[in-house]
Image 1 (cartoon, one colour):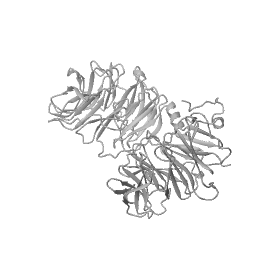
Image 2 (tube, rainbow, N blue to C red; image 1 turned 180 degrees about the horizontal axis):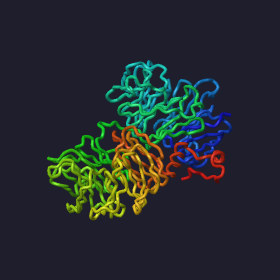
Image 3 (spheres, one colour; image 1 turned 120 degrees about the vertical axis):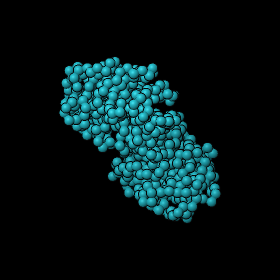
Image 4 (cartoon, rainbow, N blue to C red; image 1 turned 60 degrees about the vertical axis):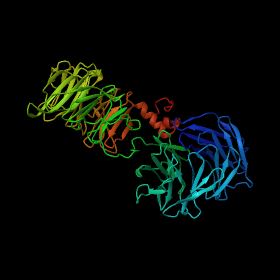
Length: 630
């Protein structure tokens, strides 16, 4: 009796297992069984290979006597193909079941022949060399190497007739170690030749190697992500992730459980449709690779400035320091036309979002501040800070969005290097107050809008209505360091400061005393700290442009998060479960930071929950529960 046969769906979300006479489906993301048990009625016949259709509704099972399909929704058997001669799994020839890109075609490999079985009509067509082929996304054609390995041929379906004269390749492919793969839009084909992996444009008939002329390929099975931005090659020891647009190798990761993979065997693998995970099957386990944070698009030009909205949904970006573009962080695409400088205005001097993300303030050197509606991207108002050459560099909106605090620097009355803090009723264009408070590195309003915190040589809290100081300075004055960033915490009862020594300190607003010991890091970047809505975690940018997390209650660092480029801005999602970081390439990185989110990510990566035995080993004094239950 052949053991349990398993197959992972193309989208990596469903696992089918066939054991004896029973077929079961499993949701990989939750580890739970999906649906009932389908009884196959095999009467003891050993199962040689199984395959799951693209939609997850159809099962193909090969036994020694026949190939048969089942509708997994109804449990009913469909078409059956009885083999003229019983297949012998001990004979040493290949026996494999598969599906094409559409449910209509089942693919059966026996020895050196591939049978394309049309489940609509019951007819079958055959082609030799079954391994080096791939079906188009629409299921209308098949691509495969020519017999001499010198060109790529296109066959129409279901008849498998050659169309055209083929696409020549620079180097012949003989005994190619992996099949070809077609991109989701049907415009490109990934081809192995010359020990490298190449992308061939089917229209232009030109090819380029992934990773450049010296790119090394792991000789694995190739798959494209649903949006076509990434390609993966799953080998017996490593998995390579490539960016399709420029052929850059983004990651080479070891195959977990590779000791269970024989040399030359390749794990069954696929991208999740949302592009966040790449999953592969080794033995009886499905492993998930979290691809969040990989730069899937090629940066045309690095950002000179970037700012995330408080909830991380939007980003203000500028590449040249002239034009400002509003983007959504879900896919990085612009949601507005560029906002260019007007005549007489200089380059960008500062940017800020309102707390709800509905407003954006754009400041320019030798110019004023324009307040934009982030939904319509239309200007709502303008602030001209002074007639002097005073540049708006630091800005912050009040919680209700009606006032705008501005930190100005530049020339005042002929004196260079002068600094001012002003608060404006920006809708009316009316200055509420102005004060000389030294060079300012950060401004922030309290949650009720009554106070304004100023980060400069010292940390101060002002009356937001009058600009008058409220109590003594918090820290920094005369001690040889500057306050770089301040933000209110604990509903305005506490104030966090980040200073040039790299210390993050939480202060009691009423007593001006530290609530917890200072947490230490390498922190120098002003206006880049973020505070979780759950009021437990803060994030700040280090000297090296990385992100450091802090536990505010404990006054301790939680570690540093890596990004592919220098980070410009950070933000937490509205529920506090995820931290986002915008880097200089324009990529938005995401990290799960809440306990619930970490549990869900662990369940998704493992593809299952903890067994009772694993629970007893690791948590012997805690009652068992399904931590991956939805």
